Image (cartoon, rainbow, N blue to C red):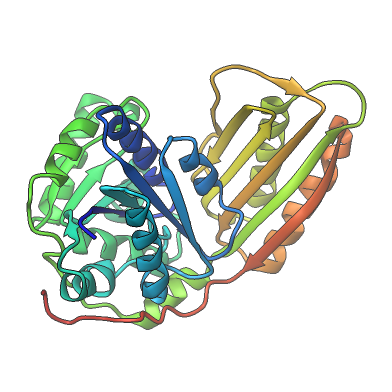
Length: 363
């Protein structure tokens, strides 16, 4: 099983899925055979549906994070390798950390034939401002703790979404990250525009060492940092009550209804993702913080009478409240001329992390 395995971590909303999708497209364009592994606490994942549109083979590890289900993760990697994938890109759960100790070191020990790339961690400029520059933040202190640990253990830190920054903001933020995390390489990237993507791919194929850092982790703080989030995945069938529906507009209204409900409760958002598919057409909408704007990714408008929707929400609120908010918003679809039938919905609080392996020394 000779493959190049590239693990890309980062907190919720950092842009991991977009980076992996665009990287996969470029590698496939270069005649490489690529596989992708997504990860979540429950099935019905927008990320999986998004990655499947890259043209690569995709496997989903659902029900636990990679570190708590190491056999499941390696089963996905082996399955892709058996299908001929020479390069595998993997995206762990956004609230997951301690990847060097629980994933990279065990792989180096047990699967030396796997060519591991340096651990990359994406960071969002808004989270950098909040967590590292003491901007007022609604994030729970232990969720902030997870974000800091992710950067401390990274071989490479990528400041994503730099297309949203001025030149001076970019320079200031990169300098701050380099000063704060001197043992990690720090660079800029824009998953949306593609800036920095080729340079990052060249680096992860350069043969540099992977898993160079193991951090001390307070698992009580880590567990609480995850447990403050309600975690919801839902699959919903949509049908017009009368005539054609512009699905992107419908999705935009639904996302803003959800945002308004979270704002009324001052409940910070890790991310809310919505994908609507109708025939061969689809649109994806994202909201990555309470004070942000709903972003929509679609080439053009499309209409229809039926659609399928996948909704993922990670919000700093109890699972019971989160489910009530989502069901109320979906139920309100009738006001816009859409009948919404929930096919599956799971809402939970992540359990305490319990890794399959945890190495204390670098292999």
